[in-house]
Image 1 (tube, rainbow, N blue to C red):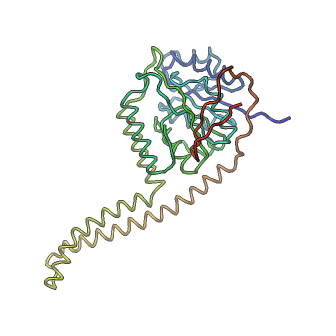
Image 2: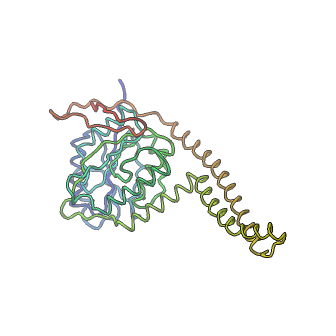
Image 3: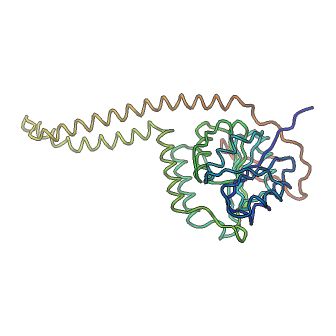
Length: 338
C-alpha cells in the first residue's frame, strides 16, 4: 500500500486572538489530514488559548519577528508539504487544498498564493506600491516572473524547506524565500487568492516605511551576495569614471607640455583606477565562491525526493473548478487539483 504524503500547516501569530481560531478551523475543513501548528510569537492576548481550543498544536517562539518563527518552524516541522499562512485571516484558508494539490501534481517546490484584493481597504496603498517596487527590484536583479514577492500564503516541498537557510528575522523572510527559489531555479507556481480585510480586533504588524526599508536592505544585501560580479562591476565602473575624470586634464597637460604639473592629482587618479581594478577582480572571485555555494545548496536540495502524489480528496464542492495556476518556470497553464 502506497504511503500517503504528509501535510503540515504553519500559522505564525502575534496577538491574533480575534482571527486565529477561524484560520485554524478553515484549514481543518480544507485539509482534515494535516497537522496544524500555530507558532505564537510573544503574544500578550489569548492567541494561545484560542488556537488550542480550535484544535491546533501550539508552539512558541519568544524571539519576536516572523523570520524567527519561520526559522524555528522549518527546523522543527517535517512534512512532504508545508503550508504557510498568516494568522490574521486576510488570506482565504479554504483554498489550501488547491495549493497543496498543485504542489504535488506539478510537482513544484513552491506554490505562492498571489494576493487578489477583494475590497479596497484590504491592501493599503503604501503596502501595494512598496510590494510592486520591491518585486520589480527582485525581478530586475534575479530574473523570472514574480508577481507577488511578499505573499505570506505559500506551500513548500520538503526539499525547499530543508535547503532554505532562513536567515531573516522579520517580515523580510518572504523576500528570502523568493530569492532562494530564483537562486536555485526551483519550479514554482502562482495561484491568485483573495486578500481581504482583517477582522475587527486584529491589527496589522507591518509598518510601510520601516519594513519596506528593511526589505530593500535585504534585497541589496542579497544582490551583493548572489550577484557579486554585477555589484562589484557597478562599483568598479563608478570608481573608474572618477579616475578618468581626474586623469584626463593631467594627460592633456602631459600631451601639450610634456610635463606633469599636477602630480598629486595624477597619483590620486592612478590609485583610484587601481582600486577599481581590484574591486572588479574581487567581484569575480566572489562570483566563483557563490557558484560553489550554489552547487552545495543544489546538492542539499536534491538529497530529498520530489513531492509525491497527493492523497485522494473527494470533498470538492459542486460547481467549483480548479483555480488557474501560473507556472513561474514557464508559460501560463491550468492545472487539475483533483
